[in-house]
Image (cartoon, rainbow, N blue to C red):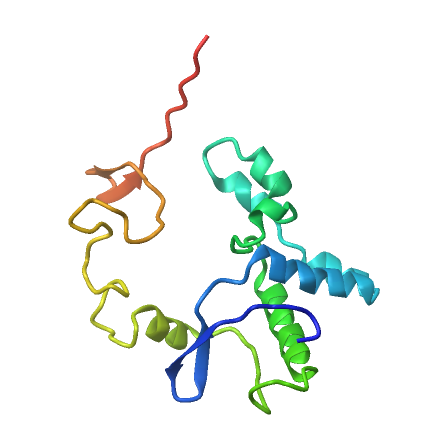
Length: 175
């Protein structure tokens, strides 16, 4: 690549390969910085991550909102708050970067977002009977270690509405 982007792919089906890892803040910053350098200001603004996505969480997130995308400490964290259109633009840019590399492994490559069916196939490792890639219906192993990232939520059954509802978070402050 004319820019340094580490990509690691695995085949999922036929000639479709999927990245093993999320797009990092560092890789996505290369993309938006390239837009800015090429004076595509409107596209640059449209492709910047929406840091307001951190406001949806029920706790104080201002430091994360301010630093997550740009601070080097978060370089290898996944980029968040990217719109569908921005993700497509990133894929187009990545395709162009790949084809500019004279030492590329494959002649014709198109980077794109997976379809829902492709994503489901990749997420359950090709076995549609699996709930999770590791197979079990559990999110912890026998040592109580988490097998995935998830949001801890308190819920209760509302017998009037006949559905489960999320309980509001209780914030405790001290004096």
